[in-house]
Image 1 (cartoon, one colour):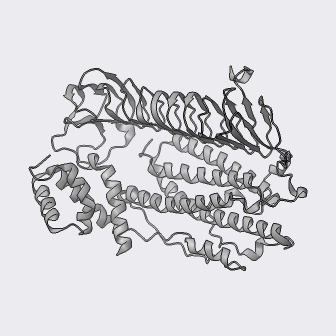
Image 2 (spheres, chains in turn orange, red):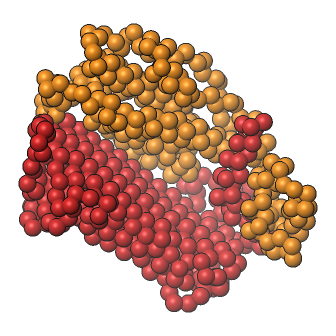
Image 3 (cartoon, one colour):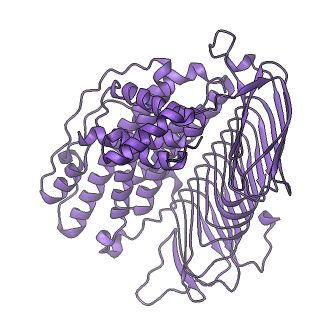
Length: 275
Length: 313
């Protein structure tokens, strides 16, 4: 596994640059010499090259939104709604499943990062000014937890292809002072988040639908049961949030539940067949 | 071009992680039964996987990996050198096609490994146990139970529907299930535990960073609160129960939407603070650590270690 000039570890370290074509001449020559002598590394390089070619043939995965739209929304007073993006047709041949799932996870990880950053930002003291009259968010009336939101979690979970919400639909409260602005931002954030999660969940559910037939029925039953548990949590959080849109607790609970759903669907995408 | 380079970078990263599997040695051999011993370099990896059956690993004071393995039907694939030993189930038929996993028989691996070896243990519907290895451990099963002890540096235990249990971990622990319960005992390192409907039970934890999340399961924590540590507990509908040492120094932020909060610690409102239903902020000791607990409808119970509650027994 080792030749006199370059070890397999050194080869591993140089491989990304080698594939990018950014190695200097001497290092490139050393890599090529190592490749001609080491079965392990030659095999690895071949596999990589094949995966690169295969991945290049995958359909493009456009993110549901980019950061700029969020920034723009905060700079300009009237928030520009997201444009709906047509869903591309995607076919998963069995041989592509692993690569496709990996690609999807890479894509969704970035989006989740964006949302997480956004949610952290929401927890900054932007809503520090809270009038006494509204300090009742520890509402212990459990009846408020009944799902009564206009859009249920199941709708989000099933990835309905609704368009991104326009802000005009959100801002119905009397626009008086800082509170109204805070409430508007909170509602905007929430709708954006739900939209992005909805799109990602939709994509992951497409993979899950394909994978169902490859998985053991008892595993599928457990996964579906747990998805229902998460959906119920989403519905409860949304219903409560509809009553108190500025609640960081409720917003956090909803985000956690949506995260859990994405996480579980990702897990399903990567489960070995017939489990 | 930039995107292409990024894509290549990602692929390289993914494949480098899987490099050992991709670059299976050409001297890989197949067996129905295997009894062998391979010398393993210090810090070498032992990679064991099966579909159904049981993986049982113990650490011992020899520099060798000793494998005793068998499979009821199908073949075992084995390859080994001084840096890596790999044993898996061959799930392809004579024509090279992938068999349905239902057609692969139960396998049993009993493996002794040098202390400090890195373990990668994976089962589909089988159980995984490892003890005494004193090295890094990644153990997972889809529907089986995972039980590891005596791991070091970094330990991860995962199962979808089985239980996951880690004990005596001298390093960071990551534990994850979907519906199975999680238990961690005597961990000194960061702890991340996550389930959907399983319960999380952490006992004897010495950590500066603990994060737990579940949707409908309950969470219980008994461990130290380190100065400047961060402890986060989240559940939607499950109960969160924290057993905090009486002499700990921490700032608590505890919040529930429709559940209840109960604490043994005296809650003193600072000037300007107002009591809010479902929300409690309070400080004990020097307040250097930060503890947060949040539920939607679950109960939050914080005891100070001096009382024994019926639920803790």
